Image (cartoon, rainbow, N blue to C red):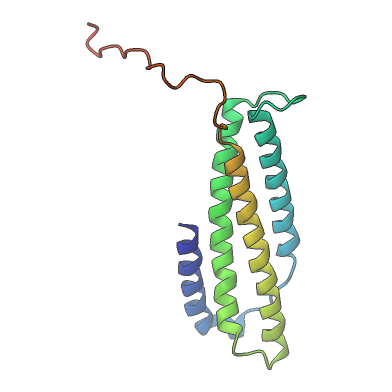
Length: 155
């Protein structure tokens, strides 16, 4: 799903750039540190939750609602990074043939760095999502059947 998002956004961006690139201001590199900060926070959160869910010595158990929110955050961040990465790929494909001029060359470098940062964010988000899984052999007995459900009719 993430790869499909990257490809679709790249195609849309490439098509739009054919019409408006000349009127755009030069790209900046300032999004890269912000994305790397997000990746660092999500990677730390994934490491922390993995330890807490696994019952590592000296950690408090993770609240189930907090873990659920972390999973939602990871999924949303990965999808957003895929969309932004697709935009960066669209720029990279569009600018690949224009490296003779200084502005397109600088934009190609900036969009390449931005794409790399998006990949790092996607990796951190996937790591966070994996960190939220319950490890096998957590002490629950899966052989015990669940309790019988009550009839909706009260019988």
